[in-house]
Amino acid sequence: MGALNASLDARPARPRAHRCAHETCRAESPDVARLKAHPLDDSKGGFRRRAPQVFFAIALLGFALSGCGGSQVGMAPLGEPTFELEEGRAVQILEEAAADLQLETRRGELVDVGFDAPLDVDLDFVGMRSSVAWISSNDLARWGDAIPDAAPQNQLRILSGRGESRGMHVLLLRADSYRFFREPDALQRGGISEREIEARLRQDLRDFIEFERSRGANSGASSLQ
Image 1 (cartoon, rainbow, N blue to C red):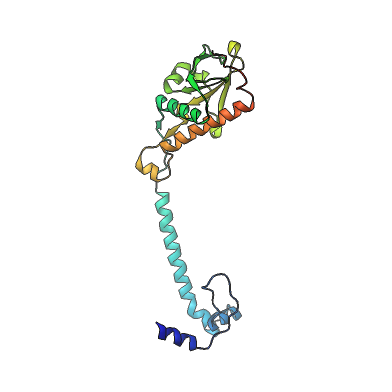
Image 2 (image 1 turned 60 degrees about the vertical axis):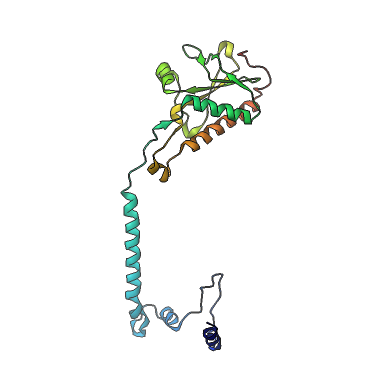
C-alpha cells in the first residue's frame, strides 16, 4: 500500500475546479467538461456513449422505487385499537400521577354535573375542588347520551358542578379514548402501545391539575367533605 501511495503522489496533480465540504468532490474530467460544452452534440462522442448508461441507471431506480411502494400499498391499515385500560389500572395510574404532584387523593363521592342523577366520581383531590371520573363501557351503557363525546384531538373534557356541587370541576375520562394495540404486528407498524396510553393518561392528569391550580381550585377545601 505504501508503494501504491507513493506512485499516486508522484503523478502530476490535476487542476481542481472547486472543493466543497464533501471529500468525494473532484475536478471535472475532460469527458464531463466536453458534455457541458456540447450537451446535445453527438459529434463529440461523450453524449452518445453515456446516454445508455444513464437510461439504465434510471430504469433500475424506477424498478427499486416501484418495488418498495408496492409492498406498502399492499399493507392492510391498522384500524382502530381494540384494547382499553381497565378501570382499576386507570385509577392506580391517576393516584400515582397525583402523588408525583404532591397531591393527596381519596375515593370520590357524588357530584352534580347536570345529569339525571349525581355522577359517582372515582377520585377527589384533598384540598381542591377537583375530581376525576373514569367512564367505563358500563358507565356509557348506564348514562347513555348524557356522557359527552370525547373531545377532539385528545383535549380534556371538564364538567362543571351544579347546585350544591357548584364550583367543582370533574375531569371526564372516557375509557374508549384510551385504547391501544397489543398485537405484535400492529406494534411493529407503529400502533399505539399500552405504555404510551398510560403515559398519556398521566399527562392528562398533570394538565388538568395545572389548569385547576391556575384557577385557584386549591384555595379551599373540597365541597365533598
